[in-house]
Image 1 (tube, rainbow over the protein chains, first blue to last red):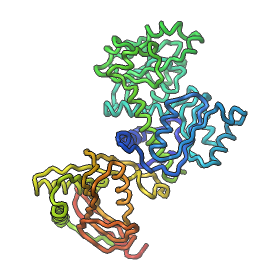
Image 2 (image 1 turned 135 degrees about the horizontal axis):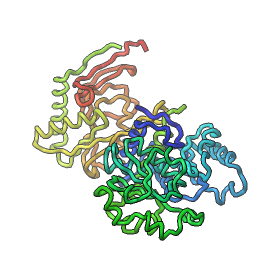
Image 3 (image 1 turned 90 degrees about the vertical axis):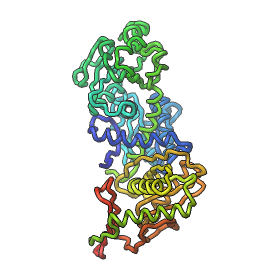
Image 4 (image 1 turned 90 degrees about the horizontal axis):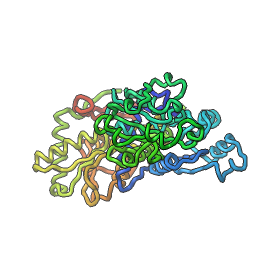
Length: 309
Length: 181
């Protein structure tokens, strides 16, 4: 089996074997992170450009480290303080960066669909979606999948509970698809005001009561609550949110013994997750961060090599 | 292509034992020795050498596996990006004597990549190379220290080393192109 994809916009067209191949490749990249010389020459002479129109520390840094560990040159372009601030259009920006020799462009943008636009406009470079609006965040889903797979092995029949603001979450959308594709069952929980109206189309079971949603779960996945959602009146207060939907030590007892606690970060301590849980023995949050580097190494390696259509 | 069996199962067994004795003689024992097999068939052969050393001296020589994919010099030329296999060397190789094992030496490019991959894992005091088949046509100044069988081939010929673990049987086949291109 070989890798044919040149771009990564979403994982919703991936087959089970695509996920399995990527997990395998990621585990081989992961072992590089344990070496004293954490570098391999595979992507020498390749240029990866991170284009971030939204603030991000971990995704951008993770791509930067992943590219560098494989010897690519990585350039960070941020909207503030750049030609975008002078009014340059996205199209002119990406053409400029491609003219400078970019082989891959990682794009994070607040608008849904911007990565598709890049695929259309770029002649040669690979496009990787680093998160577009509320649409998709494929590399987050892949690193979550890898973290769980590395710990649990096969995810067939495993129960995953995703809790929080599903409505605005590109992470939830990508994760639901990825976990289901490898055989897991997905339950969703959170206030009904933060659930999409087309919730049935997500192919997951909605359970408003968090205790029931995480009952017997192998993985509890907490989503970040954005404070501006409170101003929009979608829930009364952060305090009340924590009381009803925050993950506490007491609640974890409902899940399977040793269940994995995951979160895409950055975490709001005392809102969606209690500090004692975030720092507790079942927290995989920092393992997710490490997995993010390995997953992005595997993706950059697979997408930048070979001769793609 | 014309098929020629150039090593039967029995011959392969005997050849590997002979290599094992040569290594033992040359290295004067197995102190600080680590066997490193190049993925994939080099790993199978490395395991057999490890067993020979055990049978011979009752010693358990540490063994690791090395994948050279990320170190290839032709990554930008290939149609498909080759998949990465596992690299796992269980001991720190710094100061150790490494016996690198591969099935066939041809252009020498795999060994060049393997040496680079090895150096990223540590700084061995010595690296020696054992191969089952040396088929000439070298493109780099690299030569094995222990050779099972040396043969003369054309560049377009194919030498296939088959091992039970992956291929169901043990033998070496030379597929001669016969100049048909």
